[in-house]
Image 1 (cartoon, rainbow, N blue to C red):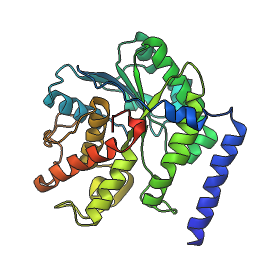
Image 2 (cartoon, rainbow, N blue to C red):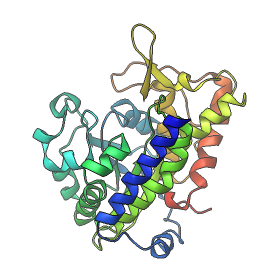
Image 3 (cartoon, rainbow, N blue to C red):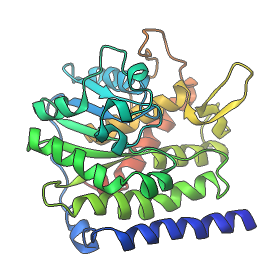
Amino acid sequence: MILAGLAAIAAAGVYGAWRAMQARPLDMAAFQARYAAALAKPDAALTVYHLGHSLVGRDMPVMLDQLAHAAGFAAHAHASQLGWGASLDQHRKGPDATPGFAEENAHANHRPAAEALASGAFDAVVLTEMVEIRDAIKYHQSAEALAHWAAAARAGNPDVRVYLYETWHRLDDPEGWLTRIDADLPRAWQDVLMRGAMARPDVGTIYLIPGGQVLAAAVRAMEAGQIPGLTQREALFSRDAAGAVDPIHLNDLGAYLIALTHFATLYQQSPEGLPHQLRRADGQMAQALPEPAVLPLQRLVWSVVQGYALTGIAR
């Protein structure tokens, strides 16, 4: 309890200090007004650009491709730029400043970020900040970097849809994994990153892909006995060769949930009925959810995504 209390105080200091130092974020009333009207639902396949790190990874966008194709969007395609835990600011500074740039982008779907966005070839751009999000805010100019990439995307294509992909924290976070996910959506992702970036007039509206919120809702349902065949949060996370749980990286089941979240947000439709036996980026079959768990989790994803005006979906 003492450790958690100290962590909460430290967190408040980080967020409060940042807000005191930065240019004024977009006024809350003006921010909320941006989401009063929903985005128009896409009526054609999207070409999507993902900028981020291993919580994007190679497999999840390939799973998203397959989901979109199965839903009738046969022309859906993606490109990406990744790094090892890279921040948006490190990506902004270039390959030499982006850890693991060469290793993480040695695949056919890589396209350099600045060139890709300038081309105007993408209908949607999904931007991903590093975790720990407090460190990103304190040391990596998160809102400024988010504004940079959003403005670059909009300069290349004025009609582009820009999204911030909300991720999650380490399972062993001293403040509590669910507690952090609940608290950081408003205080970090919304108030610091989104409102901070959207104060710039060339940024436009940034929408939210609520990955952390979906994982938290799935875990609560699993641990309440509501998802057949899945009862513990660790079932969604990777393990090493010795069987130890990776506290931050997802396995195939978790990646599938996040791919469903991207599909539901980007295409503004329920993923109910979409296939759950998909391939990874290497062409191998991914581990699939237990059959009885598929429909409840697909419905859960849609329920969560519809619950936030920031996703741009009509409620």
